[in-house]
Length: 105
Image 1 (cartoon, one colour):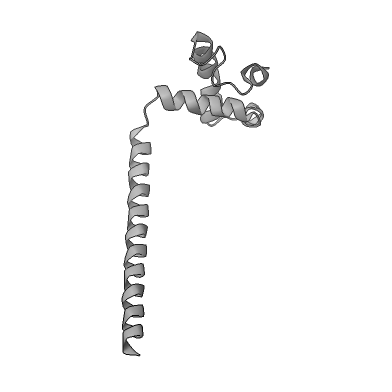
Image 2 (cartoon, rainbow, N blue to C red):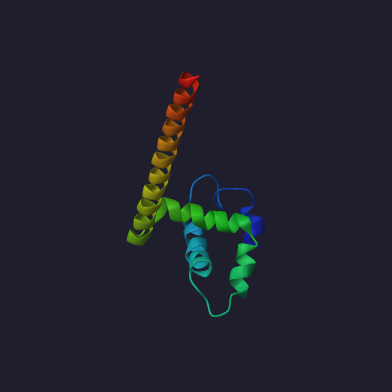
């Protein structure tokens, strides 16, 4: 029923969040985000991609990331920066080798 009411809209009552959005988020967010002893309801909610998107969207707007999430993002960013540096070094080394080979003939 909630999924049908939300449809493809960002929020339940238009383009801006309303008190209804806050109420629905207050119920759905813990059901989707916290471990539950029985996951039937969680599985049912996850089968409604528009409700999952709604919860993620509202959370991204109103809930700041936790310290753990920030640390994880920073760590992942460092990992990708290291990979990029290695790839750039390998590409540069490949250029040098191809120049050496082409000038030796």
